[in-house]
Amino acid sequence: MIELCTIGFTKKSAADFFGALRRAKVQRLIDVRLNNVSQLAGFTKKHDLEFFLREIVDAEYVHELLLTPRQEDFEAYRAGKLTWADYEQAYAALLRERKVEKELPRSLFDVRSVLLCSEATPEHCHRRIAAEYLAAKWGGITIRHL
Image 1 (cartoon, rainbow, N blue to C red):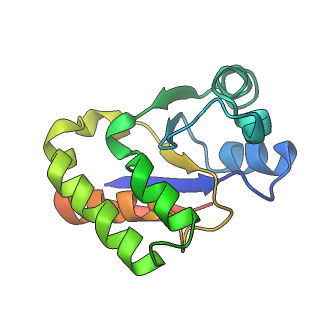
Image 2 (cartoon, rainbow, N blue to C red):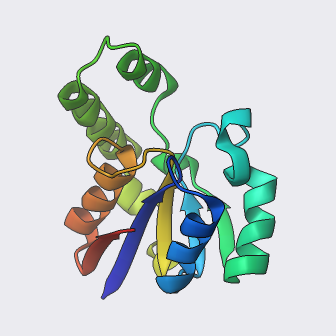
């Protein structure tokens, strides 16, 4: 049985963010953001995050492009041109198109893992959709939102 966690960094201090990862005993953070080097990412910019994960949590960093949304869909949703329901359908279709359940090695989740995106809560974030997709396709996965 795999317990797959998800977390967003928006509206969290570094202490809250890394504390949640440590309490959940996360060993691998899987970044599912399109842009992991944005100035807006603060303490979660790729190179900073790799360092902090190693030093504070003793966890590994992976940027998994198979789980990132399509840039044009993401921008359309942010601009209000796609509703959340339409964005959710487009992202789920993209996961099917990419055959994520076949292309992504299940072994990536052999250790306690967390999917990272920016949204504060999972309700309107693609990390939740990705976790639910993998749980449905692979089975044996419980999802925990940090």
